[in-house]
Amino acid sequence: MAGFTCLCFKRKVSRIAWLLCKRTEVRKHTVCRIFTSGSNTQQQQLSSARGSICMYSTESSINGCTALLYRNHGDPAQVVQLENMALPSVGAKSVLVKLLAAPVNPSDINMIQGTYAILPNLPAVGGNEGVAQVLEVGSQVKALKPGDWVIPRDAGLGTWRTAAVLAEDDVISLPNDIPLFSAATLGVNPCTAFRMLSDFEELKPGDTVIQNAANSGVGQAVIQIAAARGIQTINVVRVRPDLTQLTDRLKAMGASHVIKEETLRRHEMKELFKTCPRPKLALNGVGGKSATELLRHLQVGGSMVTYGGMAKQPITVPVMRGPYGECWMSSAP
Image (cartoon, rainbow, N blue to C red):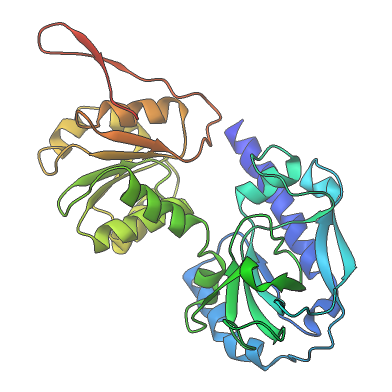
C-alpha cells in the first residue's frame, strides 16, 4: 500500500509540473519552475540560471498570469487546471511579483484534496511555498523595491502561478544571492526544524535528538541545524536500495548516526547509547510503530514532538517496566 501511495503521489505531482510548463506563454515575463526534488547537479544548473532569470523583462504592464487553479476539492490530477487569470492593478500598498520557483509539498496535495487543516477559499491557486521577484511596488510600499526576492509570509498564498499582485504584508524579503531551491523551500521545512529544536527542550552541545523520516526536508534541516549547534542526531530511515549512498549523504550534512527502522528494536541501540546520551528530544514525522520505538529510547522526562503522520497510523505510547517491577509510561508531552 505504501508503494501504491508513493506512485500515486508521483503521478499527481508529474501532472501538476506538466500543466505548469505546458504553455510557452509562461516564459514571456518569468521563469517559473516547479519541482519535487533535485540532485545537486540539477540544483547547480538551476542556480546558474539565476542570471538569465534576472535578465527577463521586468516591465510593469503585466495584466495577467498563468496559474494552476482548482475550483473544487478532489484528486489533484482531476481538479487542477492550467488557466489564464487577470491581475488587478498595483495598489498603493501592494507589489507585482513574478514567481521564480515553487515546490510541490504533501501539504499542497492535501489542500487540493480538502484534507488539510487549513483550506483557502475556492477557487484557489495551488502552492504554499515559493520564491518570487518584485517587478513593481505601490506608492506607499517602503520595505520592498523592484528586483527584491520575496517568499510568502503565510500558507495559502497560491504560488503555482507565473505572476501575482500581493499586499506588501503578505511577503517577506530575503537575500537574492542564495540558491534558488533554498529560497523557494525556506518557509516551511527549515522553519519547522528550527522551532522543534528550540521550543520544546533546552538542548545543549552534546545532547542527542532522535528523529524518523530523517531524509525528509524537515529531517535534513534538523541534521544541519543540530550539527551547527553541536547537538548529536540519531537519524532513522527506511531500508532502500541506495541506503549506503543516503547514509553517506546525511552524514556529510552533519548526521551523527544513521540507522534503519529495524535497528530501533534491536540490541544495537544499547551499544549506540554507550557512545552518546539517550535522546532528550524525539521528532516524529511518521507515526505508528516508528513513533512508538522513538518513545522507547527517550531519556526519562524527554519530549516527543509529532509534526507529521506519513504512516497514517495512530501513535501508541509504550508501557515500560521499571527495576522493581513497576510499570511507567514514556514521557511524550
